[in-house]
Image (tube, rainbow, N blue to C red; front, side, top):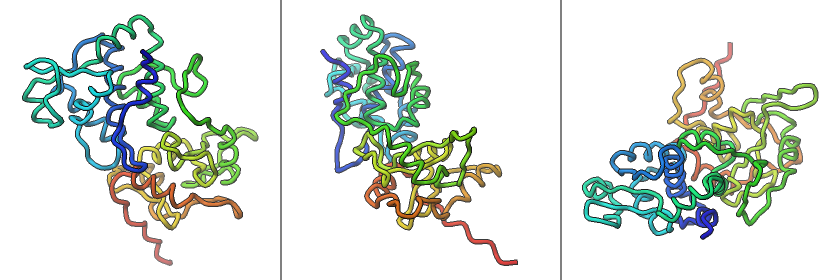
Length: 303
């Protein structure tokens, strides 16, 4: 049984390029619990709030139920559900799972395999992260589900099941196109001649067929890259910055670094370089950006 391939091939709801990371999030959560506590069952009523939080923070912008993956992950051969009446899920409804005392855990064969090969857990976790989330979120997602695994492209023994290879030139091409300045705030820090804190962000995530092309990239500082991938920030049709109404920040730093960006034109790319393509902007707005955008900040009145 190739458990890494099974993790990479989870059957997910699909409609065009829509994100549906419900099953990967539940499996990551279950792997984290297994790593910390062994093979104890996870009672739905006890983990429901944890799963809600993960879906709200790392799932698609629309509301969704944690009952969905708890029930449907059974069909992928890595998860089992039991109730007071025996084996099998009572359905996809929250009430049914609660009323039946539903519990879930990794299937026995996978638990045996994880004990026999301690490296398997990390390899499964990494392929789930690579297939469903951008690298900027990997470390914090591992922390959120309680997983202790190494992330990053240079982890020894990393097993990739990806059908595409990343273009390692993209970072330099994107940073050059934006003249080594954050497209949101203009940050351009360097140590000597080496830029620091600047990253090439995919607008349409690589895991969702986003190409390694300049018109799918933004040069962003580390803060704004994280906020862009978390759906706090976005790009409007007029290439102006969107800020989610759901973002709350009361201090002057939050206002200056986030809320006051609303409506500001992107910095770059330099003349002659294609801006972010409309199809990639539209994907990010529909699949990552959270809620409605704030109104653009009013221009100051003339003195």
